[in-house]
Amino acid sequence: MVPRAAAQSAKQPILITADLTDVPRKLIHADMEIPVAPGPVTLTAAKWIPGNHRPSGPIDNFTGLVVHGGGRELAWRRDDVDLYAFHIDVPEGVTKLDIHVDFLAVPGNTVSSDDGSTSGLQTTMEWEEILLYPAATPVRDIPVIPSVKLPDGWKLGTALTPTSTDGDTTHFAQTTIEMLVDSPVIAGKYFREISLATDVTPKHFLDVAADAPEDLDLKPAMLDSLSKLVREAGAMYASRHYDSYHFLLGLSDSEQSNGLEHHQSSDNRTPEHAFSDDSVAQLYADLLPHEYTHSWNGKYRRPIGLATPDYATPMKGNLLWVYEGMTEYLGQILAVRSGFDTPEQFRENLAFSAAELDVKPGRTWRDLEDTAVSSSILRGTSREWSNWRRGQDYYREGELIWLDVDTTIRKLTHGQKSLNDFCALFLGKGGNTPPEVVPYDFDELVATLNQVVPNDWAAFLRERLTSKAAHAPLEGITRSGYELTYSDGPSSYERALFGRGGVIDAYFSAGIFARHDGVISDVRVGSAAYKAGLGPDDKIIAVNGRAFSGPVLALALKSAKGTTQPIDLIVENTDYFRVVHLDYHEGAKYPVLKRIDNTPDVLSQILTPLTR
Ligand SMILES: [Zn+2]
Image (cartoon, rainbow, N blue to C red; front, side, top):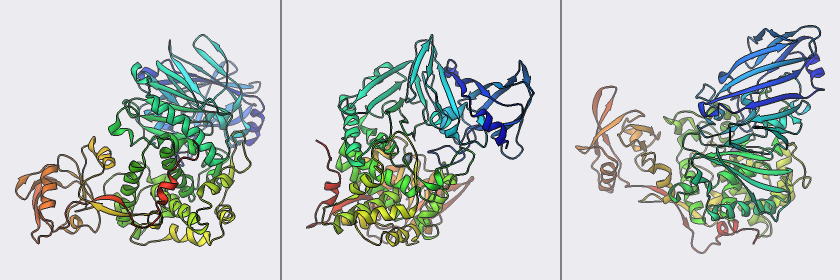
């Protein structure tokens, strides 16, 4: 690293122009002018991507690097250890480098959502795809002036401030590398910008791109919910930490679905009909509320270990059960309060995730906090044996913990206070501010909870974070007036979740998920299926002598209820067949929340809007 050269270069802004004219064939070009001083210089691409919490900068698709200085091509050499860093010897008399790169928006090795960010008709470009900047300098200290060149007739939306246009090129006001990486650009042939909650200051926009023009005609109810969301979040978080806010929404079956938070915008990508087809809409109900909540919880208030000065510094994920877990809880609540979701859909969704966590055997060897610490290795892992590995449980188990906190506050204060009061203090700290990062640690979190209502919150949280109990912390559900139980048919949420993918769910009963062709995708450790010797990639050929299908398996599970006769399966694995006796007699089981009689329905109170 060469801080001397980097520090000098930081005085003049970098110029970067993204050329999106080749987006239809999944190529993005960029030209940069980077001020430098003569001597050795290290430039770097972004590695640890904010919001991804992992080293997912798409360096494998970062190509076509050519460096010019003083009118001639200069050699670059990649660092032997840090593959994101490039060393260049800048000759005497040269004060800027002209750099060209090409980003390949195609599948890559870093499992980056950048790789799947374009269709033939739109892109959501995150600037880390094409960016180099001087190493070893805090990214908030590096000025940059960005521009974007579009294909003929395309339009764009972004939280960057436009200053002028010049043909197909839009120029933006000077910002910093930190805010550039925080400000993606959505662009498309079919594009619309819609003002939201026009009674609210600052301004809010929906910037939507679609692969078909008719998909831009979003339902009035959806737009109404978005405006409500803006008002509800303002009421709950008692502050705003942006100059304006842009919901970027890419509707496409060709792009990778995604949600990535930023201070002043969010990169939301869903299937084409995610908001128009009621059978899938509930799966995306909390996407925008979740990413929007991150503007407060995650971007403005950030765990100290994630508040890194640049994208080379490794991130520490131990507080992700706050960053993601509380956002999961708040996002789901806001989805109901603003009308994206109904209370019944909320309960179905919560029942499924609570049950999935409650029967997860991996919780006996790995505590919740370890799933947060291990965040960067738990994204994109395989389905097989995932119940033993555990996944990114700090999201949904974090949600259970924050429901637990919310209902405990309500109980201790006899309904006078709630998590809303905590949010106003913790997320609204300092009132309205421009986008900035205010880091926190575990102690501040606990102190703020104690400010709302005195309790041994440190012990309360530590116990839940480090527990290796066989079951999930469900006290928040019971304190809210409900209990987790099982019914003999799937909820509409479960049907939406598994219907399209053809997943056969006998997970909470016999202990398997299977595909429609009989291939088992996962076996729950400790279940009847596990005890019978089944494992992932076993293929069920026949059930009680009859060719396998979802309904045949369901009928067999139902018929075996209360009997002692095992279900006989013919199973194939790697070309060999065997007979498996599945000793399961409890019938079908699908999670559901049931009201506890004669208790207050606290959950309904939690889901009630704060604004009218
Ligand atoms: Zn999130």
